[in-house]
Length: 411
Image (cartoon, rainbow, N blue to C red; front, side):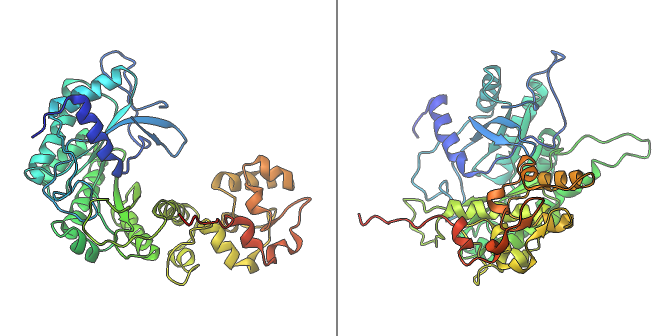
């Protein structure tokens, strides 16, 4: 086996980790090292950058412990049959890298995933040991996110939750049938059981004992999961339906969508819905509408006959164009629920409109100052000094928002 330096391993294993969706430290317990007795911080702003819901940018060392793997999932670049350069960090190497990068002010936390080597238990044990050394020996107080292995022993996942801020267990694909076809060594039932165990342990950690003592915090930033999209034939309605069940069933903080792109050396004939990154982006937008804007699944996915999202325009705009009879809305009279359905209006903009109109009428120029995107909203609202007239029902309204056609190259 080729012997690599630490820097060469870092290049290989940080590149291999780009397929794992990461998250920010939002929602975790606040910890810092200002007292001088510990190391690191999971607060403040931020080689991987992630953004918290409140807009903070944090930096994470995002690596695989190893990209060796005993599994042969057809969609994974690191599968056992893939012809890629392989490397492996020892436990101490990951600990040292994390501490060294923190001391140089490069990072505020660690995102650690891994291929499965030897066995799920052996791999998970090494990952837990890394987190334990960082917390117990190095007094590292920064953010740690561990991608856990569902087949590992429950006690290993339990210890991981006591050491890490967030745990994630990947559901892999949108349906059990797709997992059976493309990742036959993985068991969807075991994945769901592991996710349920994490949820229960997190709930138990919130309950005080009969003496009033609070148990140790368990994964205080919650759990998340990742779903590969485009590696099987599932449409967006199926994907978002699975996400909805995951959010409600396991109280997830986030479902991450990872666009599948064919691997150059792949011998597997996997379907590709193009363009994959644009589809991933639309799924995130639809996910947000389902969770925070009061839309239901059927509303979002009925825009096209095949159950997929419109790739050219965002899901809220696509819905509004199909329901023009509900518009234009008077921003000074419409309900919060309907204002949230106006293209270009976010939750903060709607909150500001509601607050302002208690005291005076909201005018067109006010909405722009409140953060509304009037380029999108102007066809769907009336306000003081503004009426869209015939714009709402104009035949070319969609064309105003869709990207212009491109001349394709013949070469």
